[in-house]
Length: 78
Image: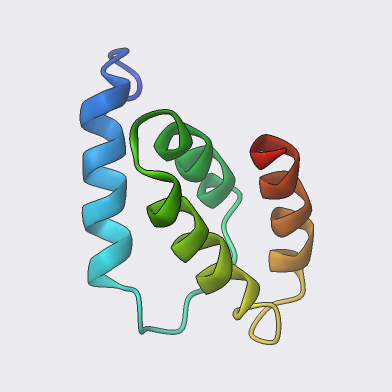
């Protein structure tokens, strides 16, 4: 909702909070993860983004589409 209202900083905070809650759970791939990371990249520290890139990289075995997402993430971190 914050993202739709143009409140990206608050959206980033909520995305980070939500991801932290489900960090150790098995997740199905969702295209929204890339959007979340793009927004978080603008407002969160680089070490936080690197943590989540590694977390999603580790999930490639759970769902192959995470590999495509990692390529998208690399495009925003270069």
